[in-house]
Amino acid sequence: MASHSPSIGRPRTCVLALVAIALALGACATKPPAGDLEAQRYYKEINDPLEPMNRQILKFNRGFERVILTPVAKTYRAVLPAPARKGVYNLLHNLRSPVIFGNDVMQGEGKRAGNTLLRFVLNTTLGIGGLFDVATRLGVESHDEDFGQTLATHGVGEGFYLVLPIFGPSSPRDGIGLAVDILIDPIFWILRSENLNYVNYIRTGVEGVDIYARNLDQIEELKRTSLDYYAALRSTYRQNRRSEILNGAEEDPDFPEYLFEDEFEEEEKPPADGGRRE
Image 1: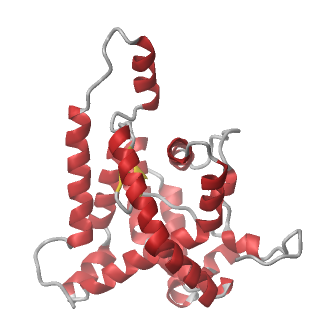
Image 2: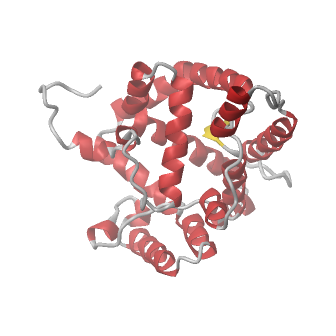
């Protein structure tokens, strides 16, 4: 049912509210006593003053994953073959093109902005609305940008580590970036003006399932191999964001690349043991 409320929409409003609450809690977080040098050093290096709360939110998120997200993602992978899932990914990425383009411009990346615009035109027309990535086949490579990265390129620090319910690892900068990306997305406003706001909710849900399904095996591997999954996830998130902000210019030997492999490329290769992927 389409929403006629002047509000942005419940999921979007929740993002803004969560960021505002986290900022307030971060400002009130108690720092270690001045005499406890080890605790002071840990507090500064980790920058996670909300760790007890963050761990509880992560516990909630893992419960949500176990009960809802993982079964849905596994069903999604079982029902749709890899080429169909690739089409879904292509379509969703193409719909993000206006947001990527806007952030390219705000970062002063004229060449990348032109690249994004060309990809959008090619994939929307020749790629049947974006289902097929014609642009990549023609040599126009894909990239992603968001407002959190834009803030970083203009010198805004990430702030403390933050775990959002459902949305997962974040920071005040990236949480605000998430909200701004929603506000500058013309497709969101077009759908809303046509009383098709429910399509925005469907799009958000499908995006979440698609991302989780593409990384499901890698996430499970991180859970299995980590002594402290919370700390491993925090480190991985920060390293990944640093790489994204620098457009991949920084190579970090400690970065667990297996977390961000292209699922579709992997599925084209036969498993070494001749087995099947789940």
